[in-house]
Image (cartoon, rainbow, N blue to C red; front, side, top):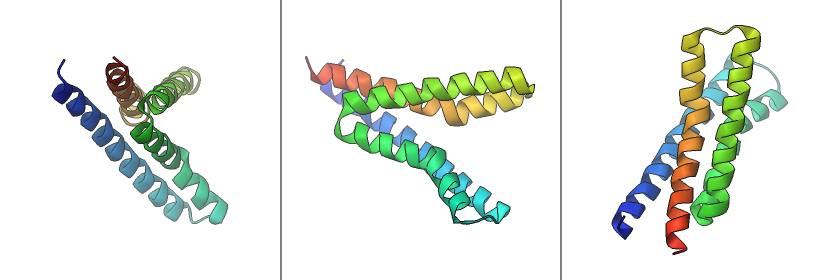
Amino acid sequence: MTQVQYAWLRSVARVLMIIAIVFWLWFGIGSAYVENAGPFNWLMHILVPGGIFTLSTLVAWRWEGIGGALLALEGLVALSFIVRAFLLANFSASGLVLMCLTLGLPPLAAGILFLICWRRSRK
């Protein structure tokens, strides 16, 4: 692959995570507002997972190898929790797909893309 193609992969990873971050921050703020709970509830709704994704993406923006590994790990952990919840709580298949597409796959895919770019930059 050429340097331009790796720059394109890096941009795709960044845009993917920006979309995921905006979605989860919006979702967290909306959930906290609807629940009308205290400040701790607001903080937790905003930080998990929106804040975690934000910090990991900022790390990946600066240090692609570390951030890419962190994002990939977050994606795998999220997917394992989603599948476990699906099996234990008897969620619907559409719920499983939705959670995988919004919570697990974006950081996993972006992490892999960041790792590919990092590996290429080391050659």
